[in-house]
Length: 136
Length: 136
DNA sequence: CTGTATCCTACGCGATACTG
DNA sequence: CAGTATCGCGTAGGATACAG
Image 1: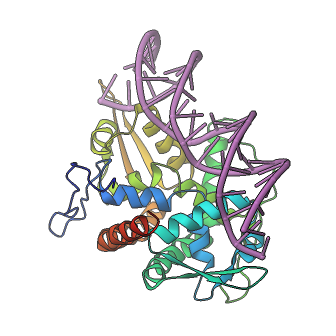
Image 2: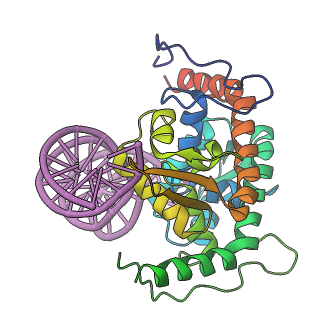
Image 3: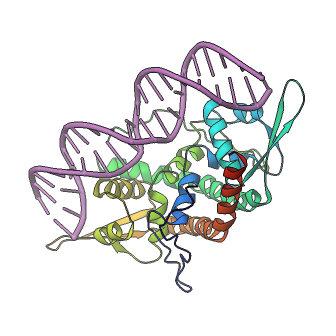
């Protein structure tokens, strides 16, 4: 429904070989980047690496996430086709979440982001300390 | 200003070779990921690719960013050692922003995220449409 | 041009309670 | 167990005005 935006969706964000992509607010890239940039999506995708996890399992693993936000986040990811939701008709209910093929391709990138963070956290800590010291 | 987090930073986020990284809220990875996940940082880093840009140039390029948020974002990135700030003592003032060597290493990852987004925006749009249609 | 200082609102998100 | 529904707060961030 809200697809019918008369707004011209920027189809080509890359000009030639240069990576000068579109920065308009209504750019698809921005839309998706915002999703990735929310508080939990990235965590969930990173965690859902080639194995499926149950709702409660995710909730226990991700420190600090509320029931509500886990649900909301999973729904968004499901809507984006990144995560699959499988309901087992048993009692008590059991729901498994896993990455879709599309989700897997994103996971690779996410993972490299996490890896980068792990590799450089010390440098960042040092930089922060220096900055704070200098501005004292 | 008073950013003095006395919170114990978790030192080891990686257990062995497994990529089961720490998900605690006070984990460094989470701290940095949160920074990356804010509304503008990612955009700025992506834009600052191997060339320096002036304040106004950034502001014009990033659609929708306010003066305040650009300043705040740049300060954070500078504090994290990802972006360098060069003030030219001329009048009117001229300030150039550029990626530091550390920032460049992050840029590569960010760029792959942007590229992924560009490559798969159609799939996501389709997935969303299907999801919305199904839940009608 | 490149900021900084206030003010103020929207909404992300947590807490809690309830349901199938 | 796996949600949904409500309420309410904190704060990210926009608007505006002022300054070096």
